[in-house]
Length: 127
Image (cartoon, rainbow, N blue to C red; front, side, top):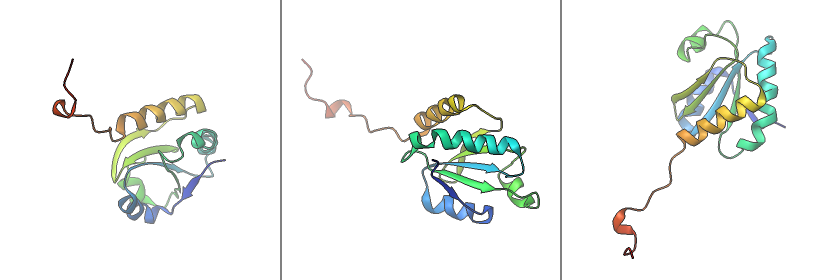
């Protein structure tokens, strides 16, 4: 089952600042059917991303205009992938689990910190 961290929207900034790294934030509402579908899709694939992409669920209320404006949430569901406090990917449509898996695999691959490649002087003499 999903290993989501549920965070109140008011504390999201502080959480992102204190943890850093890649993190997925799903802005949704239990009142919106498509949000529930995305939550289930994330639940299905989340074990594959354990340790590489923490997943956060934010239940967004219509009255939280400041949060909507700060994160530019134009529709629900909205998935934002943060690297620290910077938004590096945005998804504002519904995907099937297989499509969502591919999107997140590509996102993690692209935005992960690359391993240090050896410099040419680090290599031994060439034969």
